[in-house]
Length: 290
Ligand SMILES: [Zn+2]
Ligand SMILES: [Zn+2]
Ligand SMILES: [Zn+2]
Image (cartoon, rainbow, N blue to C red; front, side):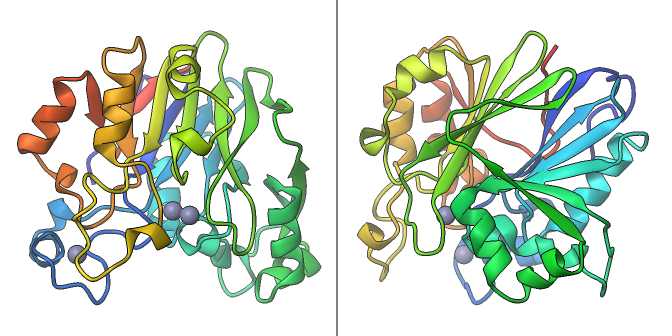
């Protein structure tokens, strides 16, 4: 695991700790070319989408989402910022790629004491009311903190977080994206959304108000998953997002890439995206927020 420049970044920043859709790469049970290659070559493996936040002055760090790769992602974050213990976890929604890592906080493993877990009221209710997650609450491993939509909270003196509701399949919870505001720069983190036209905001205008945007890039094209009905798992296509944002004044990277997505590696699809000024998220990428 290579993190570019493990030392020397002494202020507030965000670090990308995972870039894949909930199933990761390689995905279990899949024989597609991407997964077959990733089984052989560790460099092609991708952890599930997760963002780390660090405030060196406050000596604290946070993770947005607790993924099935939580252990590895926590280790990476702590190796990068050993003086900044985890001060809380922020959850987007109740699909397995985004909260299942909470399981490591219980007494079988870390046994945290009152670790703040931020979530929407409905997501917090899901954790509180359903085993085995409810045991984390009952035993005091985590302390749930409900987030009100569009109301900014302060994580630390220099880092603020605004939950932004987004439309997404809501079997168990609603879904939040987040604006992270540092002393100077703003980052928008949106790993899952059903479609930009269903959102309350105009994508281009919203992203133009950010310095960095990490956006749902699950599928590159709609013929990617043979045998699966994509209307059952809607996401904006990467091509659609890129065309809407071509040339926008913001560092835009696509994340939450499905195992089937050709953007996983270099090729004509990445080139097509780059021609529109859009990038692909990479593990360990960092952005200063000050
Ligand atoms: Zn997801
Ligand atoms: Zn696959
Ligand atoms: Zn989801």
